Image (spheres, helix red, strand yellow):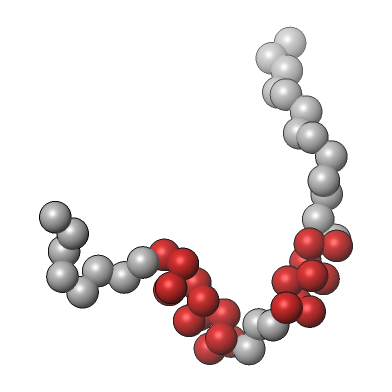
Length: 45
């Protein structure tokens, strides 16, 4: 059973984004600047 009044993560993030004024253009700018190269594994030499 789920607790009554439980907040879902997606709902909380959406509400927070609206509250601070985040919009699609902001998200696109963040995605554009993101490094999409695969991560290099750590070396323990």
